Length: 311
Image (cartoon, rainbow, N blue to C red; front, side):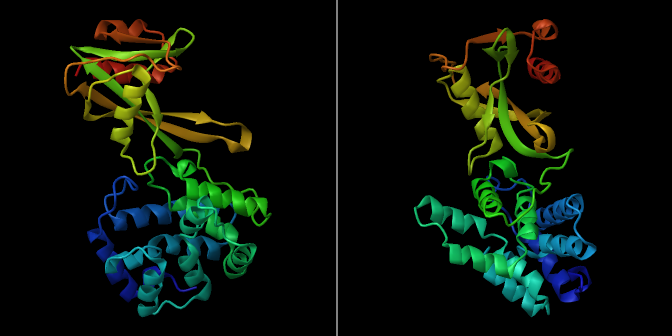
């Protein structure tokens, strides 16, 4: 196949994606060009992890760069990407079919949640037009910069389950050992030089944390989760990101890396507390001198608490 990196017209158009800004609630990439490069790199890595042929690896890497090319015209519709690609002289039918169907999970998921799932005829048509193994790998790759990670993207997870249930794809490798596929957010609330920790289980403490919801900034999730888990009524403001903690969840071949991003928080008004949530047993203020001896559920939280209490 002809690589799009050798297509002068495509390359010139592709660079214009740097001017396309993305919704920070749905992408951590600065612009569509950065996003596309990240998707291409992830697609290539996952293709190799799944034993794809050299042609399939090239196909998915090129798809990463081409799937959003229509955004240079002001729309994210796959149909516009096809128009731009054809205008650049791209004609490979297998490649264009993947571009056309690359975002199928979102509209089909939305229809399904409204009680109007795609028909079996529609599924069979999709399976006849694209390699669902390659499409599934790419859909996960396209979530490389999703704030909550691909595993928390409902349309992607739904699509994968649908094709697995129909027996159309093998057991794919969709997680890389050094890359998080699930991301949460937490907060270190500091007040008068002390940080607030909570105890959820046994006698070990932690910082409030939780999942990032759809269309939510990670920093906003940190504020929301801190207020909910620590029982805080007052408004909070974000003072910047402190660090993140990675850990492995799952068993055997289904293990994946989960990341928690922690943000420094301050009260935007006098602190007011409410009753603790049902899962929180205790909230406690700790000073810098207490950090080293505090029993924590994860010792990786200690440097985060040091930074928060000494800021």
